[in-house]
Image (tube, rainbow, N blue to C red; front, side, top):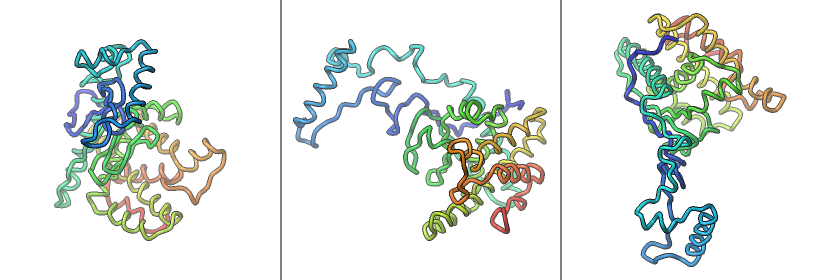
Length: 303
């Protein structure tokens, strides 16, 4: 995928290195150390004092004198700021540049499609993070994988997922990674079209099995929308030989049936909520070959 040197989106929030889900980690990595306090206006409680003493002794045993740190006006912990173990990324690192470029390409594609239909496409924002962060849909973590939150119109991506995609799922390549981003942006497109809102309303009235069936249709449509983006990207001459196969392989590897076979040795179709490998490949390919929204109606007929 020839992505270098192309426009990069400004709609990216880089939270990598900020620590825990509350936006500041308990120690190091720029988050400082957050001391617990007692009741509001009541000073420190006995339990809090005991806790602080224990924490002090633990750090003292590690060779860290918290009192000296407080006296010097610093709560950053030992000198990790620019050490080799610092996880804070450079502002122009390759991962950020790649994500910003792919996001920019999705912006161009969907702005054009919406404009052709007399509509306005509002760009989503994409949050890069490490480990965990906070979203309007709750805590986001590396375990949850990439996802889109309709409440704040943001895509959340732990960049470690790219390594997992390659090492664990056997889906390597930059276009495989781009497919993941385009799929989540596909959910934003659904949100813009009112599809996600209707799904969330219906889900409240359905049992788990019924909700899973509708969820599969929602996810497969996002795959189809990702395929539409792939077609427009290919028309720009950005794709290299083998890029389409990378995306199709990624769709294959993260199908519900394939994932369940890999993790538990058997499949439970009633629990599928993203679609089988065959379905995910087929719907991405359909969007890629047609380039039309009308080809991505996963809600009519069998999927």
